[in-house]
Length: 261
Length: 261
Image (cartoon, rainbow over all chains, first blue to last red; front, side):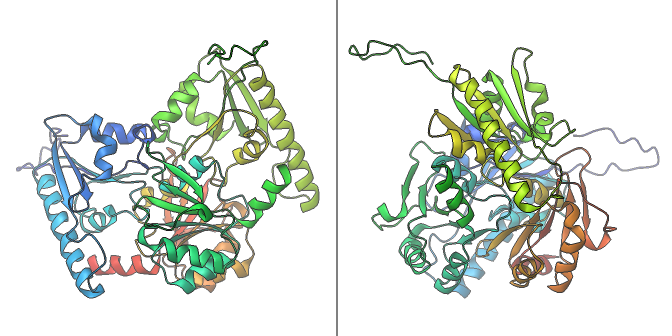
């Protein structure tokens, strides 16, 4: 940073901007941070993180022990907590929110401060960071630090391999329509259903319709101290936290398991 | 380890076995090891790794700087380099290989030595470790340490988000039949095609048939110093290394990109 300009012909030094980092902090356990993520977070002048309203922010909790008092924390708080408003209104609100968040981050970058934007899991895997990336990466030096996804942590917690060598593997957001869930589950592929939350009853219904509820495993807050793993048939059907997912091993794996049991 | 037996009724102390660790070492860059992976590898008495014939082993290369001279290295070498033998013969060879590998690891565990089995990427995401896990996890204390997958590193390298919030995301092994590749690509979902290697011409053909070749990005050895990223239409069609994959962003993301460009 702030290296001397080596070009003798330049009369005016271009101001040096800060660097943008999209940093995957992994599934929650601070031990599952990568060494690169640790260094980037420790060295950044600004640490930005997304958070739901009135919630502390999960990604910040993961990296709390790394923070120095002089670092600036930018909390980017979603304007809505649920999807309980009409889709069009939601889309407009959230677009404005991402544009304003990008502007807040840009002010730090323009002032020459490096900004580490935290992402739960991996930044480019269903992460909000991408909405800043598409707005800022063309204007500032940018690096994305990949992280461990929640589904990897969940399968490790369940002791259950998800996909094998010749198998298709599909990630389904729990919000998808019933027909699409059932159709994908019927294929027999390895499937992870993410963002379960209040969709759990609908997901259980889809698993039953596809005849795969006996293989499905529910994992809540994988890698957190309060982690829970149970067969989905043992779940009481109440709302699941945001950090929960359902693993459905591919039919090929179920066969391997039976073979070696 | 070696805690005193607290049961006064036990006359003979059960010998303490070692612990089995399935350790994801990430996509290749040692900086993308998690802190947990580093500690487990440093402390294990035995480090086991899979390797192709006459090759040094990629996972070992990633963690080389962590090794201590007194650690035992178990090289588990695949008996075949290509699929150029009949499928039935291949399956038998590879089954025997996994059984023998499990027995080699078990001997260390029985002798009380902790064994860290290295996995490129994440152990349960298309990793060979699962073949040891299904044979050994029921008999020894076992922990799986999740890791950063190659597709996360590739999308970071390409600066290209892969999947957004309401999108289906599918991983396809390059070996799948043409029809299945084309059908999945036609859906418009976000897709990663892994294990490209000698299947590159067939994959390019499938992308063209599905009308998605202009969006597809080829990434070779993501996170390694020799990493390459290029539009698939710029690839000369020659064989790709094992560590290469193709990213096809979801149609939704392509729309977001156009919006903010």
